Length: 140
Image 1 (cartoon, one colour):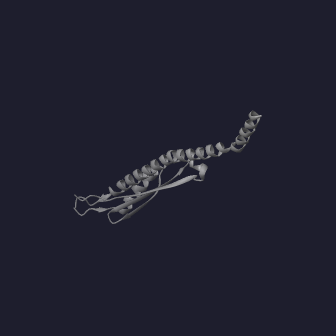
Image 2 (cartoon, helix red, strand yellow; image 1 turned 60 degrees about the horizontal axis):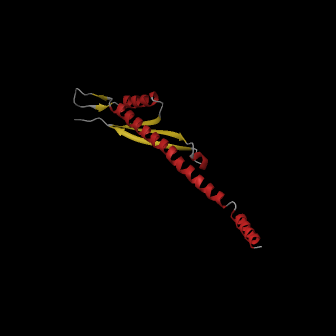
Image 3 (cartoon, rainbow, N blue to C red; image 1 turned 30 degrees about the vertical axis):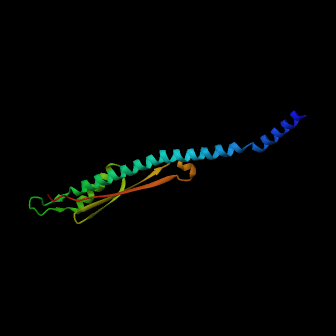
């Protein structure tokens, strides 16, 4: 009889514990997916930010090279040509951005949108990235 009672006792504990590991596995799995999403999609977002920064800096540099009156010693930035050449750089590289020229400074802002893969599962489908850089001619 003792054997019969102990098997009933074990049966009650087993029924009470059934399914408890499922919740734990579910939580751990979601945490791993979120971490993987941060690593994979985060890396893509950082890469897009670096690329946007590079394009903004290069476009600003192209614009800042549009200097006139060098031989007279009274050089000046040709604002119209600087804006046109910086915008042409952005178009040639397929980048969305804006160019502003003031006095002797060319400022370029580049923006892009990165689509996510794993972070989409937690509601983050895209992330916008923006970078602003400027360049100006050096006088010496």
